[in-house]
Length: 551
Image (cartoon, rainbow, N blue to C red; front, top):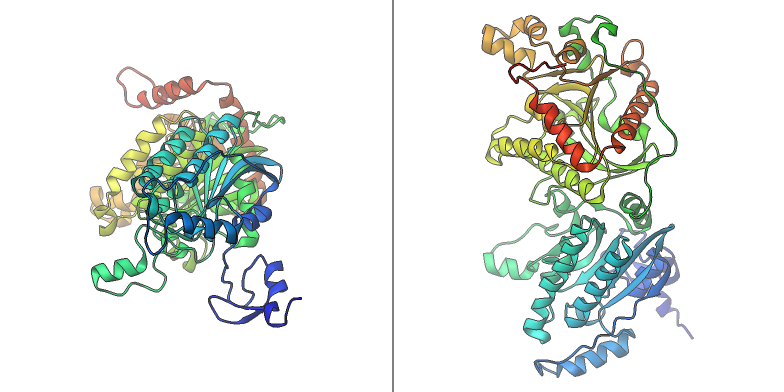
């Protein structure tokens, strides 16, 4: 019989007395403070995976060192097995999430702190090998204190063993996703947990190599309260998504939809778009007026367009090198019935939004994030769609210290070699190398009141005229308007805007954008990857070549 006292538990975080049935109905998330209590591997599988089938992983946990601390290692194993009902600290299964197949390995912190030993490493590796054989995504749910000391160097070798298993999935274009739960430390954090394509974390989950106490003892200083939490790490570019437990299935479904392999992912409907290829068909517009309109705060932004033309958009964060930049947004989405990687500059409409997104001026972290997402698109063999709207790369001292020029250069070079279709649309202002870093594409398109230039008119006027007030004159000389760019061959086509501009009818503008991009991708679908790269490089090779027309 369950006592009244057993019906209540204390929240590990806020210490509120919680009614156990209510806590369990809420997936063990405290309704008062939102703290995510630990789940067993079995509970996690039941929550996330439909029709799971446990994999038979024939391994034995051997006491190769005959290790004894306060008790023999074999006795610790027996106690953990009796208490948890598990053979070791992981369960490997195959199943589906909302119809999308996957293989998963789910760790259980309750078994020796989820420590990484030979049996755990073998189960992770077997799961990865089955995912490769089935060509379905691999999900790794991590919860670990680190390598299992009682297995010494054999435990250490599991870091290399699991890492090479994930490398093989990279080579074969199979999506990998890690769900970081609290805590994930040591050898697990320094191997398969952080090597996946996408890192999703529960709120407050801690991730790191050394633990907080060890670090504080080493450096002799106090660490921030949120140190090593998912929120701390996302702000520094190491976590893609933080999702509460109730939202995890939705996040996984969106990722799995983009990562599915072995079936056609092209839309059945044929899209057509009225793209202007002849500059004489465009209505005349003064170049300076075009600049002013392109910068209009009322014009739809990248996120506005994504919200209207894409389904199942899952934003991904971070460059995985210590930075996150809000001036570039990107992630996987469904566009016209197909998965794409959409990336774009983001400004905003209000003063607060402009400040939050650094006025659409990316730092090096923004370009490195974009490159990471482009490489993921290449791995998954899905097209890249970029939306350009920036006055230029951020010109601050910190950006220079972090390699702004190098980041832009690397992005340009990467785009020349992407083996997937790439379509760019300039939706507002395309400023200098900060714009080009997202615009080396098979098809470069622009809205008719957008602009694209080597420098802002104000900057050009200040340098060459010695007077920024000559910006209108400089704008006309720079020829950054749509008609001039089309005539020069810098853009491949121009999208007509609703009367008065895209902001006057953003729904119609979004439909034009969607149909144009979809039609361009359908045309590019017919071109093999190597030929795509060859044509893209030949296209940019022509600019300024002696004796070659740019048309």
